[in-house]
Image (cartoon, rainbow, N blue to C red; front, side, top):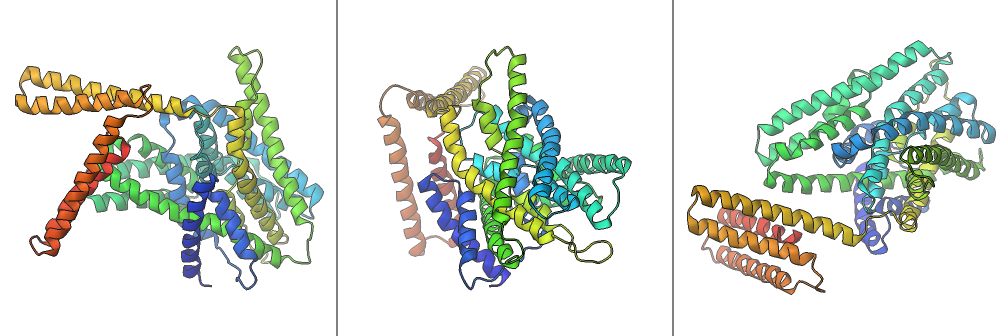
Length: 521
């Protein structure tokens, strides 16, 4: 099976899996990994060799960028203290814990055990974001787990480079050089991401061409990653910084039409990339098992022990910090719900996979790097375990903890926002009427429309079991648009209008039809 055929096959599988995932209320990444493992176990399926560049350069940047754009700057500022502690302290503790367990339970020497610990030390923003989309977590908790996964990669990447350098060169750590390298990795990544974000902002502010806007949006994460890596900085950090900066300015760079188009294009790209990468994670495991057949038969026990170590270290780190924070805020009896969810939301995924695949094949003396395949096998096995086990159990844990936002609270907030928007519009119309800046009949017509909008918003939060007037209004508008669409098709087929006219009018009808999807806002 060739690479192109593999990608197409994974996309088809992902489409089927996504359909069942929604019906079964199971995270799609979890089902994709399971499907990949099952397919990889089928006799006759060839081994899939994934190069590091495919994951780190092609797949990773846009997925990281999408995860960063979903993190509001306001929420990030509210959680920066615990995020800093988790992104540095917890990563170091996790790497040390995994290395100790690997030395005790596996044939790995200390150097390769530390490489394994560095690979698995950080949570993965792609996996965390993908698993968290379907959970109605409070904004602060969602921001905490998402920001941690975005910013802990600089620490784990430094540990990984240090460990690989020691293993490959067989040298001793130079701590002065290590501190300098960390500064270059983190600082250079921040600077490269900020520069690329500024350039993209200037370009997108000066263009309203949909195609060009889409191209710039798709190229930006790759530009940030390549710019940082070219100066030996952290490409992951650069992409994260660029995504957060541009995410805060999105409303200033685009109009409604461009946002609709970008949302559709980016959603498609993210779906395709997540489909391929999570499927490849599952496919890699059976291939590595076959490669190591007869050399190490206890790897499942070792992988389970390492995965358990990740959870235990995270629990021992998060719960005391949470208790201390609650004590400082005046809480006498610290609660377990929030730290339990934060501790369990530590899945590994694409970033650890990219790091594991980038482990060199040989040492500096061109000798084969021993135990590389075992490190790769254990890394991917642990990634699969976290995606499957934590992916399937995170939602039940959130429900058990009782911290998820209630549907009625979400609806109430939505109704409140719609009412305030409608009231702001009506107040503006009052000002227009006083200054006679528009004809009276235009103002009155718009006033009736906005008053009806406010009434529909208020009815959406009323005590009635349904809002029959609003439903009838939207249903009739759908019917009218469908009638106009049918008439447009008839006019084109009869030769009364050209294809260009048909396409322009069809686009207007499509936009109007799409506007009915959000309660006719």
